[in-house]
Length: 441
Ligand SMILES: *Cc1c(COP(=O)(O)O)cnc(C)c1O
Image (cartoon, rainbow, N blue to C red; front, side, top):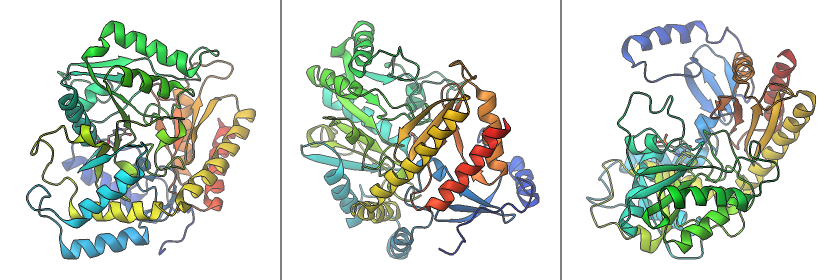
């Protein structure tokens, strides 16, 4: 790694060069493309981001769970460099190439489910979700789509209609797509204390049966751990109960693992943490290709084959360089070492966050799995969301060289998604910064 793995702040944040770039940017780039922290990043390796002013940040966000394998992972760099020098484009639906097939072999063999699977590749998470909707509708001959409160599925017309929060994703961008129905999610921190996973699932099922009708529903889309919603981990048995119901009613169960998948939780997929869960389809994107734009849908062969030839595709989807990166990432995951690392990192983070929760009642909940951890901030002594404290902590971390992300329907969650290439020392250093911020609140 050519960049010292060390946090280092040498100017105000953002620094003078970033401010000058921000000025240029504001002249030509749409204001609709917002930015959380206007430090312009020049390079990154491992778990460190370096900005144009020479500041070095510990990356606790991985570009929202994308560079899970670490910035400029040598295997990914080599695979992409080789591929880009050999072949960058034909369009797989015009003339195919081998790495697309190899990526499909890897994805189908590691997705959960004891049945024959097939895959297809696209560019973005939203595109994968849209294609899963198309496939499920074609396979079932039905139209309606079930989604959940606090969900996030993307920014295209259909996926923004599937999101829970209208703002900022949908405000003024309507008309939204129809035939999308939000059911109550299992949210253990905010549900009644005695509510079990199966009971929470029954609440959602009853709603869908009454409001939509099981026989109308083509697919149920759910994030096994909600990402933008604030790393909400449903109660045990919730997902399995939903799956039993979808199977009994001919509904396609789709796990949106765009954020939770690909080693992030210490397994290939977060779905594997729920006993007996075998989604019919899984959507993947963020962590699959070390930063290259690649997404996919994987699942039951007979469902994936329901789409007619020519019905799926897109000019850049599964481009040679993107699938080459995906192959390099998935082949490294096969060793299992990255999964162990995700679990180790998760233990350090959750251990320290739970200790902070004992000292600082502003932390209402600590939750997550593996290297996907979050805190939900509340007004001490209540469960009232505390977005002001969240914002203050976020700023404190950024000013001190730790790039953390916020999340949550109530803007009161801080989430931690470090690259798995991070050292224990850097994890502790970042958490020390967070602890200092809590002490200051
Ligand atoms: C980010 C995300 C998406 C959308 O992915 P894009 O690549 O941004 O289109 C969809 N679903 C989930 C769960 C996500 O976290």
